[in-house]
Image 1 (cartoon, rainbow, N blue to C red):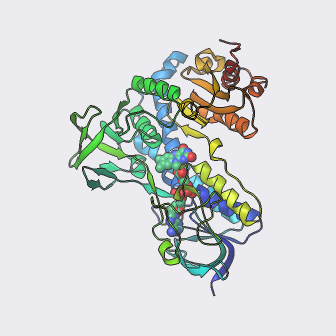
Image 2 (cartoon, rainbow, N blue to C red):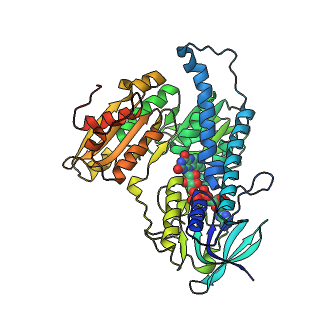
Image 3 (spheres, protein in one colour):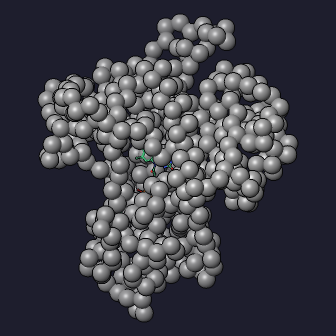
Length: 479
Ligand SMILES: Cc1cc2nc3c(=O)[nH]c(=O)nc-3n(C[C@H](O)[C@H](O)[C@H](O)COP(=O)(O)OP(=O)(O)OC[C@H]3O[C@@H](n4cnc5c(N)ncnc54)[C@H](O)[C@@H]3O)c2cc1C
């Protein structure tokens, strides 16, 4: 007879493994199924985020930034580094080690929380809300499970490029997806990146710092359209200074792999251009991953873009079947997936889990980092909202000067009448950490006056947050 569970989670990415932990904490008998394997065939829970996304990209961003600092920034501190060189193989091995530590951490958490883990592909084998759902696991952990509730957290996969009507398949030798982009065995002389989104900018930054000549081709006419326009403008200026060549409005017409990769494209003015690259990273977005689930077999509804259709509470069209994370609508971010996982487990337990998309922070881990939460200035203008803005440059922050990184600023947008914070936008050192203050403030319905009256440690980068709040009322103290 099939082993019975209260909750079965399909997928152990940040959405799935966190949902499983919360369900187990709430007292449910919980199973989690995931098919990701190491090169040796061992389970590698953690999904895209741990294996080929957030974690390895940040490991390489740190390594490459260390290299850049040693080559360019240390001298100013009176530290001379002779014979500087980079060993890409060792750098990649460190990145792999960081990934394995995270995989092992999740295996430990499953054991600690008494979650039954099944290594393999999970698919619906039948069932209903009244009799429960049957899940078949194919692979090393083959089994048949019964579950009262199923949480689908099967994530996403990279979108392949279509050029001139023809699909350009990834081979991960010349034409790379995010997996290949994180494992280039030696620094390419010329690297092409299609797509100037978060992944394209982060990957482009890694390989530029290590010595590649990087060209990013972006189809859209505007740079970082989702970010606040003042931040995007500053980022454009700083990235250009670093030598990242970003071409906007580029339509790719042909990709020709051979010894290297030829790329033909029309530029923003419609002129025909061509370029040759040693490697080409394609980072033009991601698509939901539902293959293998047998969604059609049980009538699990997908929307017109292939995402599992869910309501605001992550309920699918099937009773007691839920879906979270990249496989459903919403920002493709690990922390959004995690929050949905917690919220769904709590709803199953009869609670009222809630995820507010307006307070989900966005971070781009370039140098300088970019982070924001809430509305941008252009969104507020378009919505006709009366607002006040205040910003403060890191140039005037003592800690930033001591760090040797005074690029960028922090900016608040607040309701003109009530002063309630509507958005926080930042570009500069460690703003990935500073943005949490904006998120907390918005969750508590704070005004910029609240931030302005809170004591911030000195000297710290967080003082720039306080000063930006003061700037909304035109009373900065250090500018
Ligand atoms: C290069 C890169 C960098 C990124 N950096 C960041 C970042 O810094 N911050 C951030 O917030 N987000 C980042 N992301 C996005 C983030 O990785 C995703 O939003 C996140 O992983 C989504 O989590 P998830 O749990 O929904 O799905 P996933 O992480 O994709 O996990 C889904 C899991 O389910 C498994 N699976 C699929 N189908 C089945 C099946 N039928 N049976 C069993 N298992 C199955 C998959 O193999 C996978 O292990 C990055 C992404 C990439 C590619």
